[in-house]
Length: 476
Ligand SMILES: Cc1cc2nc3c(=O)[nH]c(=O)nc-3n(C[C@H](O)[C@H](O)[C@H](O)COP(=O)(O)OP(=O)(O)OC[C@H]3O[C@@H](n4cnc5c(N)ncnc54)[C@H](O)[C@@H]3O)c2cc1C
Image (tube, rainbow, N blue to C red):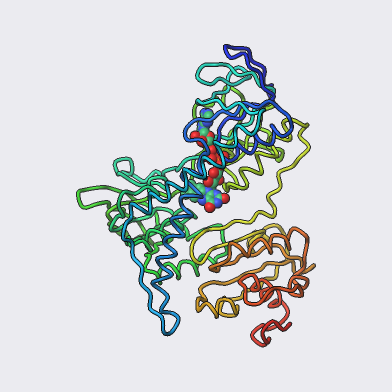
């Protein structure tokens, strides 16, 4: 490891900690350090608050909720005696309301917080690591320790011709002036799935294409069921394709894909590229500083959030792992405490819940069956379709399933996934069960409230031992 971090320069201020990047990870690191009475330079470039509040979680989730309201009215007829109808009367008003929410949360959760912490100095500008320190707008900043939290941006798959196409990314798709008539989404990850369903429900004819399958990190049963939900809603899904080329003309966009040796030309008004995220590392001077990047370009960190340069840490999306806002904040907190107090804390993502905000939602925690097997566990699994869950029957919406994975030798829960309309709010129960080493037997014996989606976890746990179809309501 090379050494960090004392630098003299024009700016004579000196800080205990310099945090580069004022998104969720940056704020978490800066506030954690300030609470420890450290003097912190928080250096922001671009919109304060970063991805989550401005162009990620907040705008996407409010638009998804709006599309759900639209869809909910349209499918009200699943209850005999009801008809429903909803339509978009003013797309601009919807987009404006999203922007207002973003602006209000950015102000309240980021800008307005800064004066509450005397120890934090907010500096505006692109920071660069130089000669063992940081420079901002050419001014040198002295700091005992540094945390890099510069986030990531949409990365575009190298499809021949894509550079000549006016493609959308997640950022521009959330800011559309008008809805495209039709849209090809390249990529079946969480962004492609969430935005694809939202825009389809808003009225765009959507085709999702992906190289493997939808949400490749989730259980195959969940991926397949989600694909069926999408297809039933009219979203076309083409999985297992190779991207050949893309071109644009007056009529729109053509994407040529190869599927099982057969070339197919897909056409749409617009194309949205959702093929992952690239870490924001350009201009930081990583190489000169001796900071190693991992495969994929993210800054390599060890389990204490240390980079390969002594005294310099990294957290959040710039590390290229666990790209969720709560993990960015968690990792940054560990980094700040380690930077100030001697590297004793370890980053632990073994019980990390994750949610994809499709409808039904995809919520997961712990190991998939394949991961558990790869780690040498002898596994047992249970699978409960939502038509076995009273909540889903009452809602007349049985799209989904619950899958649990356990250690066959000890009965200990290892992981699980919920595909259900309220899966996001149910997964934390399973996270706690796994965190505290519960067995499937103990989970099945736990009292759950009747008719809830989370009760499905109890049923899935009981499925290891008995046929839940033969149980009376709440009995067992
Ligand atoms: C469409 C979308 C939806 C999402 N939905 C969810 C969700 O529902 N739930 C969830 O948990 N996560 C979600 N995420 C992921 C989440 O937004 C990110 O994991 C999180 O915001 C990452 O935070 P960060 O602080 O690491 O990076 P960022 O928030 O991106 O912050 C990095 C900041 O550093 C700045 N910067 C870059 N270079 C420099 C430099 N040289 N000097 C100074 N500043 C610099 C950047 O401009 C930026 O402001 C979503 C992401 C997207 C794109």
